[in-house]
Length: 175
Image 1 (cartoon, helix red, strand yellow):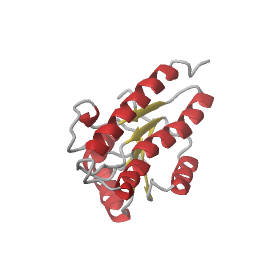
Image 2 (spheres, one colour; image 1 turned 90 degrees about the horizontal axis):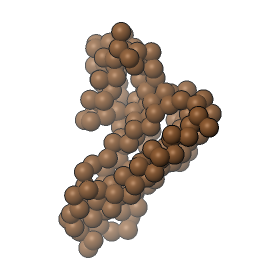
Image 3 (cartoon, rainbow, N blue to C red; image 1 turned 45 degrees about the horizontal axis):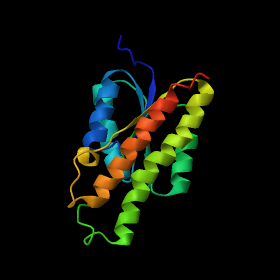
Image 4 (cartoon, rainbow, N blue to C red; image 1 turned 60 degrees about the vertical axis):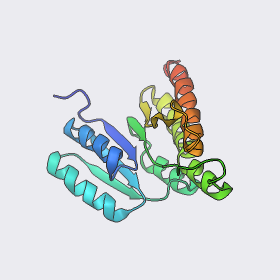
């Protein structure tokens, strides 16, 4: 029996791409899945494909995770998950002259602050249970800095620092 069988996993942006690949792997491991994404149609397709792979519970949540109220609803509905996979959000490419304030803030509200706020909410729940894992999927743009991807590189670097710092804190979940 796979080591993760029976665990529950929440994957943001879990209906396509990397998020769906992660969902597929956890389904094959026998995990119950909670998938969040903006499109109910994409979530329905992902759910159908996952149920062809494994007999697991798959619940979907169509919402915009840049919205705090939506994140709060998701946290409440998925408070018991064992593993949180933060994957939602993409930051547009461009130089400092190319990315205006609105684009920069919208991208960071979803990805940077979305990851931070989801992590903060679930960390509190996991700490109270004395177990749980948070995984932040972050692009290499935070390590390989590129002026043509300034908003993304800066956001990814910030998330890398946040994740490393949270990792150091997580050793105290049992305290």
